[in-house]
Image (cartoon, rainbow, N blue to C red):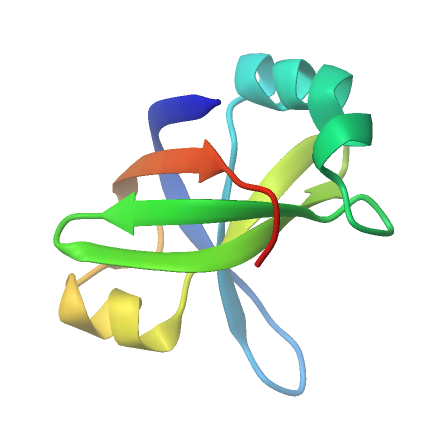
Length: 97
């Protein structure tokens, strides 16, 4: 399953700050229906993510009824992504990370 969307990146503060983008509600709802086939534990689902010229493998995970895409530091800097700005993402569910 492949998806393309644009949502704002946000900072989740903690001992080590992390950056994420929520999947849109409609896509999250569709993935919830597929989760049993793709999840490898506690709701995490392996995906391949593409932002600009950057592609990497990671996992999305559920939070507040939606899924979160973690954004790697190298991608944030390489693609010049800013908190609060929309990020165009291509995402594909995969079998494993």
